[in-house]
Length: 296
Image 1: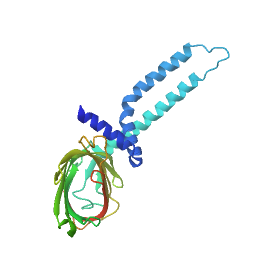
Image 2: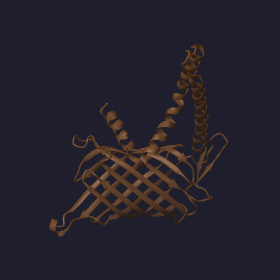
Image 3: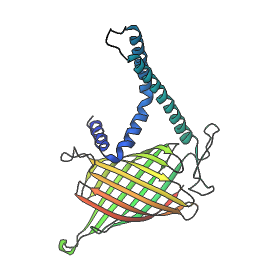
Image 4: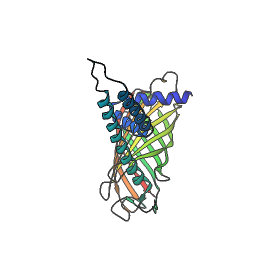
């Protein structure tokens, strides 16, 4: 129960972020529309009946009937809109057929098979490793990831990041090591070549000089623009289950914006800009990253 309360407050706190407001509102409304439509229609129908049975009082005209009819039309409109979005989501995910790697054998990475969801390759995975450097505190490190789609629209996201910093001589050139392990998965929300969005949820564990556990929530946005170019943007928020930070549900923010190039059939090299806002340790920094990915 404590974890559920923690998750609820975490999402509410993130809703206060201007950047996430539209995304969360869209996802929330999209998921609740289906189950609310039937109740919405019943209430409108009851309101129309009540208005028809109730005579207007002299000197007190009412527009309840017109309002009820307008609400009914709005409900029908949203029901049609939901059905369209639902069919697009089902088609784009359940019929998705992935190439063996981006641009490996055809111009588009994602194709769609209309014949009874018989996609030849309904999964995809990426194995990645890279290095990064932050000039502010001379931090260097390595980030290794494996993520993908196991079946149609969901799959694992496993990450491990190591930070090493060479302190100044005034601190006796102390070398410290901190690691961040993230284990979880992603659910695809949008699945097109030009615009691909996944919701990422993970358990996060920091180890080394600081040991702390928490939750990681974020989005992975991709675009397979044109052969051999790939764009990717990962944004994540972490919160930690500690007494002193229990009400701080975005204690660690990270942004990773990268440009990738396919250099052979399955191999991609990339360069990226990284931004970290570590409120837990009162540390904000920008850096650069580069690495290699293997698609299968």
